[in-house]
Length: 145
Image 1 (cartoon, helix red, strand yellow):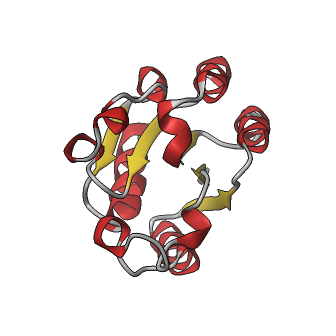
Image 2: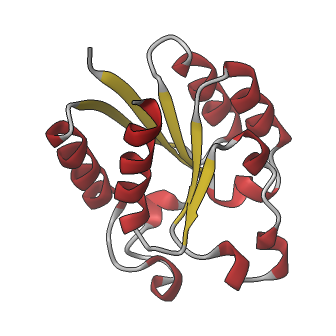
Image 3: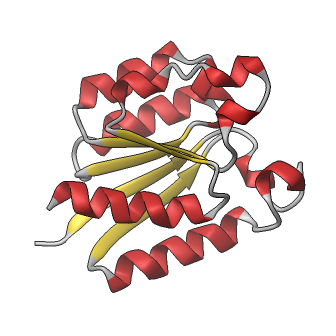
């Protein structure tokens, strides 16, 4: 049976390729989505890829993931450092989760060094640019075996 993984992207990631290219590179979110879906298909994984700038929508997506997904990969972006609600949702659904960041949050501003959602994550991938998305999928596939 094929596994289902969802990648959830938080605020401002829809602006990838346009904003702070020194931190986030030149890939667009649509380009990243296509690479992830192609990679997942080759590995026999069904992948959903979503983005929202709205915290409550992200919480709703996490909660509804319980019905259909065996793994969550989340780049909560700025909500990583502020959202107890996203943390609580991840804990509540009890789905294996990988926390993902394009930049190395520990090499940036001090406020970015604290992740609230890490408590719900099996692991964290950060600092590898958009390649981190593919690394996260690979890690999740290995974890779900």
